[in-house]
Image (cartoon, rainbow, N blue to C red; front, side, top):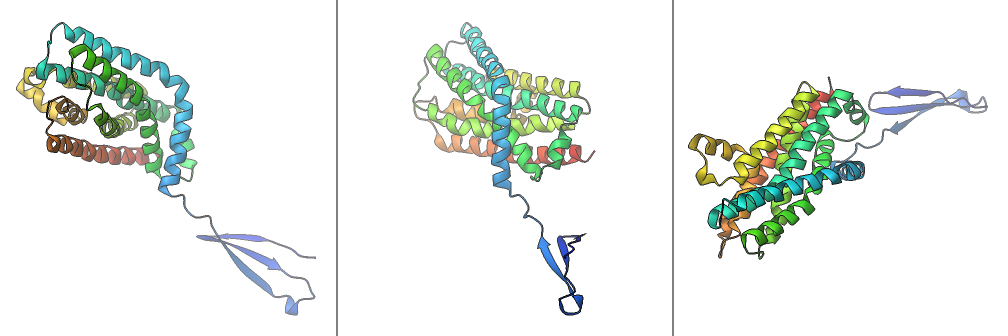
Length: 282
């Protein structure tokens, strides 16, 4: 007859096997059993992304329609004021990126604010995934919903203002980079806001800033407000997209704007990850 007691120790699990009397001197052996390896970032990120995408698919599609309809409506209104030229390019580019701001910034701020207020962060804190995977997975899922609406808005805007459709492929870089920057900002606002209502308010204000500072032509803004425009992450995505409407786009400037947008995205997502750790331990 054998008895198998278990002992838990820090960093590993040891199983002590007590052998029968037939063994020499009833010796006991300790067999170390290592713990499972720590979850890696990429598989964890993929799992969180798929979970968030499946959960938000039904609820966010109507809101994506609202965001697209809102951006198209703004372009129709601006059509009566702007005829063409640089102003038309700014309106189309700003309205297209506004779809990203509505979903990635506004809705994500509300989501994390609600998650923090309802105690949902406790569920994620118990999962064996890095904090960065939770933030990046949620941000990527929300940003993914913006792709169809952004493309539809850009096509409608180009037709409405008679702009070329040749370089719309640049949206493949603008949407993820601007989406990452705005999603990180939205997640940080939702996690740092002390109350859910304040997170909703901050998300709405952020989207309004993207609307006013992104859609309106830069040369028509007062100088102090133009400085605030330079601080908005979506501005560089708008500028990069607007430059592609030129007959001969200056691609180094486009790449520079996208690089700044990527750098801002890295910083904003890092801040959101820090805010998640801060909120999860409280």
